[in-house]
Length: 309
Image 1: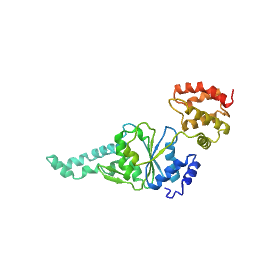
Image 2: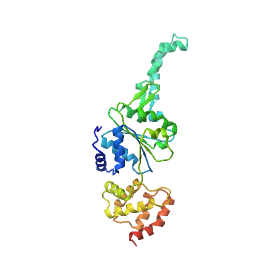
Image 3: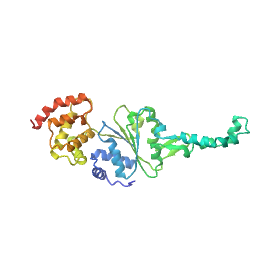
């Protein structure tokens, strides 16, 4: 892992080389998180580059990216560790005959347990442990970037479970004790604001909000990620996306939709926005029929303002 970060400008430059165009505020959050060893809670609407930020940070720091995708019902057995029950069962079957001989002359449960000694504990040892993303990050041989993606989709109980990790970079496992991080990972949590997160979690994190980009920044992003798109068309495309975001839509288009549309227009050999082509490809930008219908109604007037007939 890269141990020296010269400046915020160093991060901006490195991210740009990867095709991730970010503001100084975003780069500053990454810089402070790495220097202060603090997690970062990255909030904002879907599709604005929160997950991509973690990928860019991992590439910049030359560190492995370990990702935990959150969902409703996620618990520690899926996030931290679980036991290899199949392997435990197989070993039990292999030891059945031997155990039978060992216990043949015992006449009570207590005597049988004394005879077995610590054999039962062996089934809850490292041999049968299956690490999940959180444990992988703590036990990594090199510092890693840990992405806890869409934490707002997880239950509040799981959010509370994370507090020890976020504050002390350690986790308690009942059968093994406390596992401390070999190397403190850079932790990024993302949220789409589906629910309010607890104050306890927020206090442990630096906060970063990534909004929809301004037109100038979005033009730079499209230029970096879709360099084959004609410069004039790029300006038109971003202007139309910015216009759509001003409307009362069910789901506003994000950067990911802008890039999908730009790539499609390159494939279609477009050099300017034409009404028929826009109508045919609006499904790449808008995800509900209600929004598509509204965009079709607004399109002629917008094109007239653009100077097209």
